[in-house]
Length: 175
Image 1 (spheres, rainbow, N blue to C red):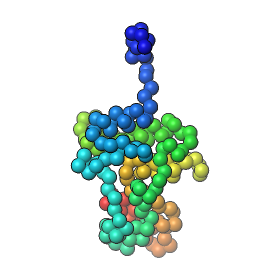
Image 2 (spheres, rainbow, N blue to C red):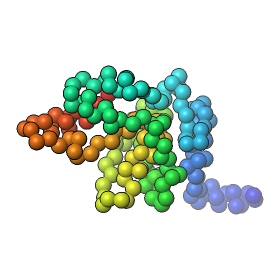
Image 3 (cartoon, rainbow, N blue to C red):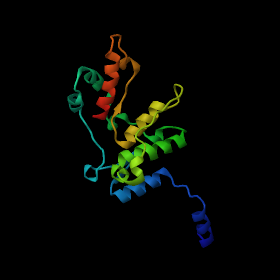
Image 4 (cartoon, helix red, strand yellow):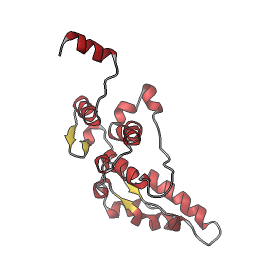
């Protein structure tokens, strides 16, 4: 590579692949790269929390939360990565930057402007466009637990029960 071509590449915009970026972050943060992303050990402050069914059931504090514990899926059991999703490259990159990296490397997002990172995303659109698969990929790659909730688990015919079920979804997810 000549000095002129290097200089023009530096002045222009250089694209960095997601794999290169993840490898660089892994080297800086002293964590090991894995096939599905980067594995963070607990001493590095990562959120790699694996809970058993019994531990998840113990988190439930009322009957509404207990009913939802069967819909909790740990990150290791999901098995969907960004590589498995065809297309949606810009969406995948945005989700990596705004959700996955803050989950993997919380210590890098704890101060300065990074503290104002995205706290969540809302995926919307017609059925069959990949919203659930993207959410599963975010959970898998970020090491987060996935709570699969459908309308039938929230909806109830009794007055006030639907509201209690909706509240239980968010309180259980926070825990």
